[in-house]
View (cartoon, rainbow, N blue to C red):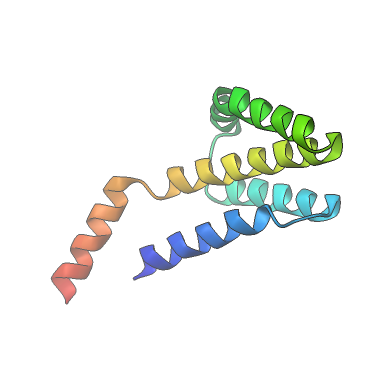
Length: 111
């Protein structure tokens, strides 16, 4: 049950990032992500490597939004995608398939 709750909260958090219109709130999301990385002891260097691998997709999406929208909108979308990729990496490091399997096994045994 706890795994499902964590996953639902992750989905809500990542979805809400795309509704943010304020630079201050985007900064707050970035700081929350960094705080989570510190608490969960996730390596910043590995996170940067992960985001650099996805950077071409982020840039491509931002450029398309600039072409079909405005420069400001394209930049916002690029930043938001970067934040979502960051929290996705954090979640993937916290919730591995092995952890999910063993947690579910405990739930089945206790039921």
